[in-house]
Length: 117
Image (cartoon, rainbow, N blue to C red; front, side, top):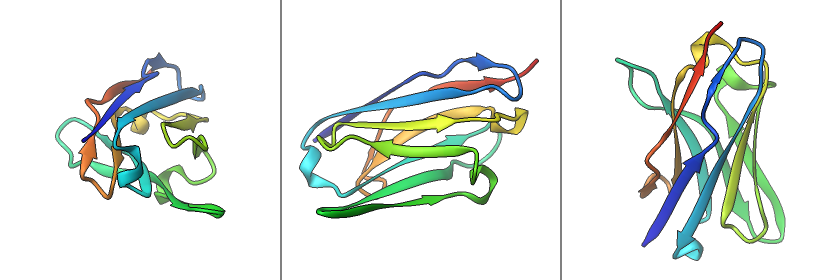
């Protein structure tokens, strides 16, 4: 089993920045990808960014078009931490952000990000 715990959500003004963290524990070698999703009220959960582990090769990162150039996904070499650096935040980024691993097999409980003046 894998446990994922997100942190870092907050209320921030438009144009501001936040850094979300996801701590993984348990069978962390049972997956080779992690990702961030968000879900706004009344909307479906959507992929924000994903990072694919490739052993000795560099990770592959993929971003939703809406966050390209503003958000950066990263993780540590121990495979137990992942981050989402969010810059130039917009009100449309307001959502609950979820950490996921193993192609959606594992999920965290979510952290609220609110972008508002």
